[in-house]
Amino acid sequence: MIAKVYTSENYRLPIVVTRFSNIYGPGQLNFSALIPDGIRLALRYLKFEPRGDGSMIRDFIFSEDVANLYLKIGEQLAKKPNKLTGEISHQYMDYEKVNEYFNWSPSHSLKDGLAKSIEWYDKWNQRK
Image 1 (cartoon, rainbow, N blue to C red):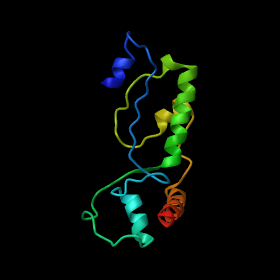
Image 2 (cartoon, helix red, strand yellow; image 1 turned 90 degrees about the horizontal axis):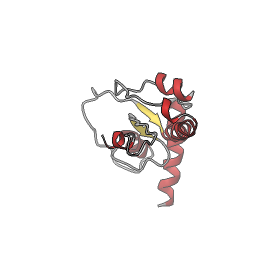
Image 3 (cartoon, helix red, strand yellow; image 1 turned 60 degrees about the horizontal axis):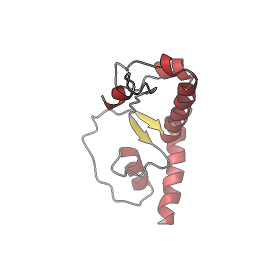
Image 4 (cartoon, one colour; image 1 turned 180 degrees about the vertical axis):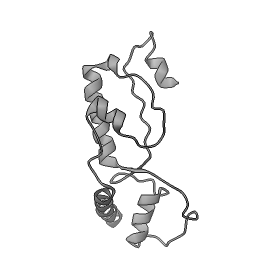
């Protein structure tokens, strides 16, 4: 609703609202999140404590992919702000719309993103 106010006749700003699933990767310091917590456990920085019964379903996206998407959105908004309107109809990660408008899709597989994340968290914890 706040974003919609800024697209109104008063401000006429080009606004894009993004909603991501669980972001993981270098720079994600929310250690209550599953992947950062799991990596720190695997690197033996923490003692394992089970969470949930394993029935939950989650979708993940790598932090560099999110940053690259924001850059792409900014570039496109500067070129054609009036053509980027609308709201997504679902809250799962479907890259079709963002690919159509910005020619973007994630470049990291979960495996590659996890490898980079493990390396980053290991270095981050060693600095402390």
